[in-house]
Image (tube, rainbow, N blue to C red):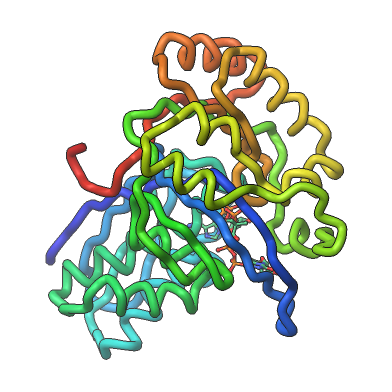
Length: 289
Ligand SMILES: C[C@@](CO)(OP(=O)(O)O)[C@H](O)COP(=O)(O)OP(=O)(O)OC[C@H]1O[C@@H](n2ccc(N)nc2=O)[C@H](O)[C@@H]1O
Ligand SMILES: Nc1ncnc2c1ncn2[C@@H]1O[C@H](COP(=O)(O)OP(=O)(O)O)[C@@H](O)[C@H]1O
């Protein structure tokens, strides 16, 4: 019976703009996504039949409610695979945090099973399949850094933030992405990110300008429900972050640092109050870098 281990990494949004609400309730976005080296480890092991999932974290579903389970089901159906699969998720990424924890598990299952079963699907085909599971799944398959448009599935790979320290801090609350989008009034967005400016600064590797222009239009919505988000952001800046915003629909707030000692000091201070605090590097999408 074959076995494979694969990492599913978290993402942050360096910018997040919402352009309009579509008829189907989804929103058209324009956002800059960046993977970070905080990951869940997924083990895939062949079994006789069916799909069996286990996770070291007791409060996420282990049946069809788990997006990784649904990813395995989808690929088994699409490629008419009879062989069963056991999935183990060793979870490090906080749940319902705005870091694409579930999406990255689904992406890892699609990438891993394609490999384990020699299905020969290219990344594009897997991304198309991933789209059926969630808007963030295609990016988690692509990896690295990208400009995401459409509902998040139209991806253009870009120069990302290299060798940058990221402090992530999640207060002890979970946020539903659907609720945040529901509470957003697209006509009342006051300040939008200057996406082109950030893209240009990324190309020039000018982290100061990137950090100075971070902007997420969902922040205001989540902040209203959970004012603690504003407080963490204020503290992140107090602890010398070059820039700080909320990631995705939140509630995780991240800060960018060039200097490890400053990042570590911010981590030490925030970790005294918020147990789900991490200091990690940006991830370029290539293993071993
Ligand atoms: C906000 C973002 C930013 O990267 O990330 P997270 O906070 O989830 O990490 C994404 O847009 C989230 O993507 P993802 O979490 O995959 O969304 P899905 O599971 O497809 O959708 C969950 C719900 O969010 C809303 N939704 C999602 C994406 C989108 N472009 N417009 C929406 O309105 C829909 O109500 C949908 O039912
Ligand atoms: N493999 C998974 N990992 C994390 N959460 C999952 C998973 N499968 C299903 N979920 C559910 O999806 C919801 C969103 O979790 P998550 O993907 O971590 O949020 P976000 O997209 O904000 O990062 C949670 O309520 C959780 O119970």
